Image (tube, rainbow, N blue to C red; front, side):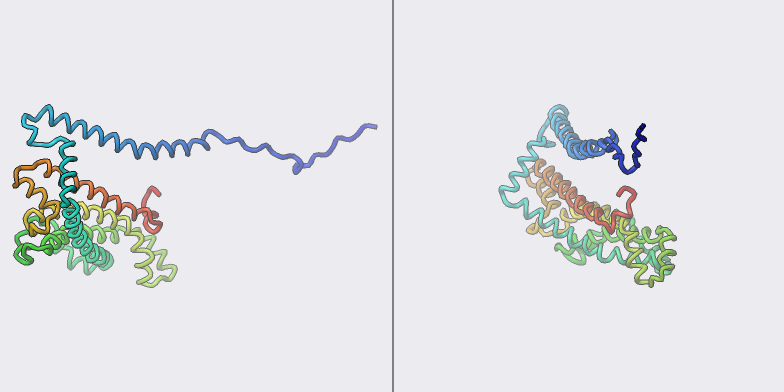
Length: 290
């Protein structure tokens, strides 16, 4: 008798496990290389800049005291730290920037959102904003001294003026540029006016508002340096006062550049701090690259 072939059901056959492809293994390696490039590319650029700075001073400057080398600047920062004045200058400047900038955010963001949401308010106040916005904050220094004297209130007022207009204009433009489909969809779901503003308008405008805040923060640092040169009490100091004082007292250009370097480093740190807000889930959805 011939035996019939054994019946094999599809469930009795175990398919071979899929082998990982080269494409599946590529993303981790690419991600690792990308993370390393974010570290060594800025580092290499900084080192190259410092070498170029050093040799440019040596080769092109007949009198090396006119512009210091990077090492002299480092020694000047150490000198300020040892005297205990560096931290006082930094704290004084940060206090003025924080006070004026925080006031600008508190006033500028709601005001800009209201101007963008209500067309009547925009038509009322936009011409006045466009007239005041191009006026340099430096031009307000005599008025600030007249109103507040040589006091911390003068630079705080100047920083507020320099920051509030970019923030308000950015917030207003962000509301006006919202896609109408978002508003129509929210209204179809029966959202009230306050719910629409809180759950749709504010999250949709947040990326552009943060961009305006970053720009205004850079402007605030520019203004605090100029204001501290002429509109502060020498006893309160500040990085701007350090620069002008080092220039007048013995032409210490190493201290001048040291103050400039500290301003740049603190500005970089503040910008990085603002950028951390962009990583929040409530904000990230508004960016193209998530």
